[in-house]
Image (cartoon, rainbow over all chains, first blue to last red; front, side, top):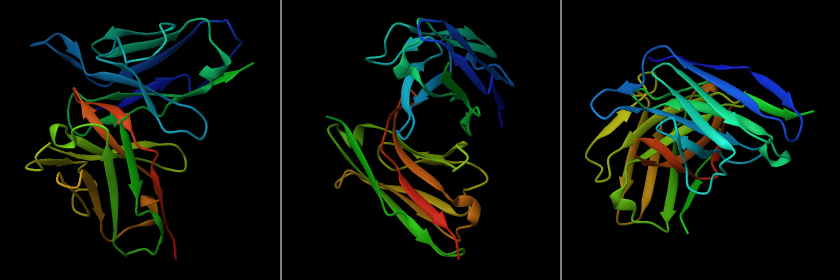
Amino acid sequence: DIAITQSPSSVAVSVGETVTLSCKSSQSLLYSENNKDYLGWYQQKPGQTPKPLIYWATNRHTGVPDRFTGSGSGTDFTLIISSVQAEDLADYYCEQYFVYPYTFGAGTKLELK
Amino acid sequence: EVQLVESGGGLVQPGASLKLSCVASGFTFSDYWMSWVRQTPGKTMEWIGDIKYDGSYTNYAPSLKNRFTISRDNAKSTLYLQMSNVRSEDTATYYCTILRDWYFDFWGPGTMVTVSS
């Protein structure tokens, strides 16, 4: 199975700051035939269902604010949240859908200072 | 409006069987692969498996394939998860999801399963 490691496990930021979340895969998620990385990011606010944020490592899901940016390729990926808002308080998970079984990271908890 | 509504969760004894349902609306159910994902009380996310749009093909997490079965009824726009010989470690919230381009494009609100005697 592909192992997904997220860091940090939690991070506290002030409103307006920029935060970078890391996601590392134990093997490359890049499919050379289409040059796509099979990596997604999901946001889960307290008491809510997970919602897709980013797919193909860099594409924002419909309706996702442009302060959320996915980057990276191969085995190293990041989610950058610029100008963090109070509503961004949530757990963030990355997930690989390159090979079965699909696997998730343990998540990063974003807290507000 | 796309909706997925899971049901069938609850308190179940170890060793029992349970069938979860997910009723879909607001999109053409028969056009999409569907998947089940669960989240433990400790918030660990685990992919359970998926099923092709016509129900002809399924994939499962290796650790679950001997006990869990995914099926669908496109006439009823309903996805199912049959769980057998449940264990305490199956205690989780079970989510039904739409697969689009192989990622989890939309999630239902989930149904909670608690395995305890």
